[in-house]
Image (spheres, rainbow, N blue to C red):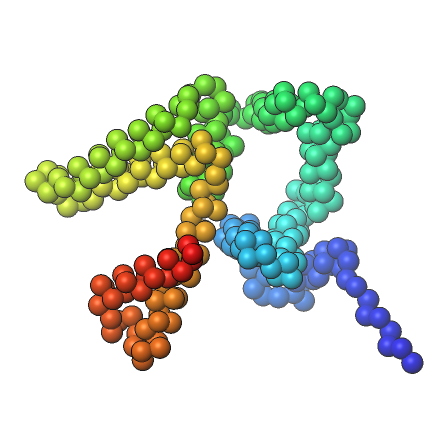
Length: 277
């Protein structure tokens, strides 16, 4: 006799589980104690884990990570419903309306080619921002760029906002020249041992380094490269090559701390050459 197929859980089940976890009498003490602020870091972490699964082309892992990210949405919707502010259905309604509103060439009969070439998406977003800002005292075009974004990503978004009103370099070349200028200023700050000392000198070095990173983000924007993705790739490359160094030393019964810098540099160059071959 064939075994009965196990029932698949639904979104409704997930909503019910979250409500039970938050039940003040029968729920989980940890879940009950959480607030919007305390679980915010988990949302950021889960989003990164989704990106990581995509980068590793791990679709099985992606399924699980998307579930974890969905839980964050359900969690917040449950807390908001407890405060009688909104519920999960309101979240679904809001995003569905937004998608329909922002795609008039699909749902509203607008010309598809005109939409793709006329920055209609941008104009619709501007109209939405203006509507949200009415009566709220909001006046800056940067107000909706979240503070919690990774710094490189936020830098690119700030630069894009400025570029929309013409405050931008006309091409890549002056951005590269600016990067060279900022590097010179950083070197000068580092070398200024006779100038401001202690915290003041450290602060200046930090500010100049920040300027370098900001202009690097601008280079990425002009090149159409996601700086966060580029840095993640660089991190992965570093780990991969250093693992080759560790493996080569392990074959000799040694660890990195047993080798000289020159030996590790040589093994690093060999790992790099093997990847480039």
